[in-house]
Figure (cartoon, rainbow, N blue to C red):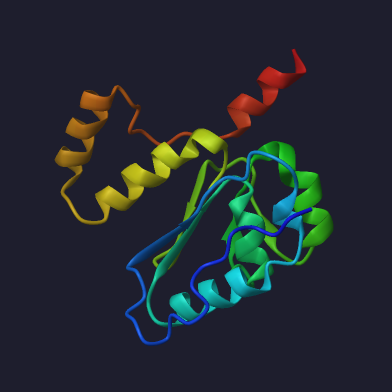
Length: 155
């Protein structure tokens, strides 16, 4: 199992990004392996004010970095058992499509990156702009949950 690509080794001399998004991991199980450098960078950026976000299995890396301690998070509902095995002390809500706090946001399924994107846009513009964007992109801007999709797999 190969480690995930790493970020620059020394980012201390530059300003951290305003937002960092850990994307879904679609192949393999690199999200379960030790990602020391990536997690160190995420912790440093978060401590310096970066809003850290994840989509799907990316939540495992936020948990590994210790950023989810004492917080509620979500990941894809099919990863729930694995997440609870590796991080039993964390509050996981796989019914939620998006769990948001001021400085951390986790999104459930792979396509929940769309909900994450709309949420991040909504932090900076009026609701009417987000609704217009949703209409233009043909995306439901209302609050949704993963639990509705979980029942589809059992049929």
